[in-house]
Length: 148
Image (cartoon, rainbow, N blue to C red; front, side, top):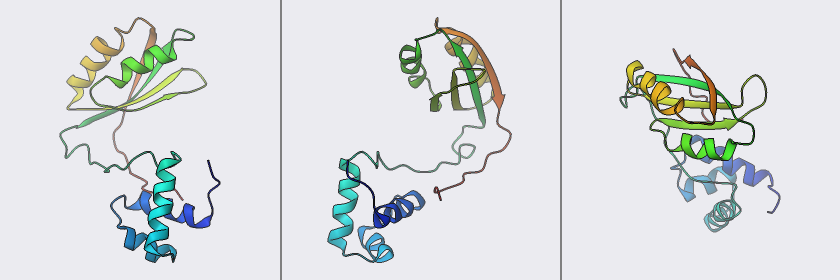
């Protein structure tokens, strides 16, 4: 992978703010030609720096009125197995292996609290490698947008 320069970092900043920005708009903002901007974005994709493009969703308006962070303690060395099962869960949007009092942090969005309860009790706790869970309800969240 090639090192990123200031123009690459500015392109990433622009695309984090607006993943739908046109090549022309990106080129104008970073003061390079459209061909240069196009080549740089393709290189960032080819190098795996840009992993994809997505939309920021208002989960409540999308019918997912309940959000929660779920912490899991899992059997030692079972991360890959557990991760594969968590990725298949409806509403799972972020999974991280972490250090501290628990092993895994999972963010989920569900239709309502009843669906959240069912997800935790019947799907997550049914995974044999999951030793315990703790559910932290999200009352309000703010999308911070692009990274600085």
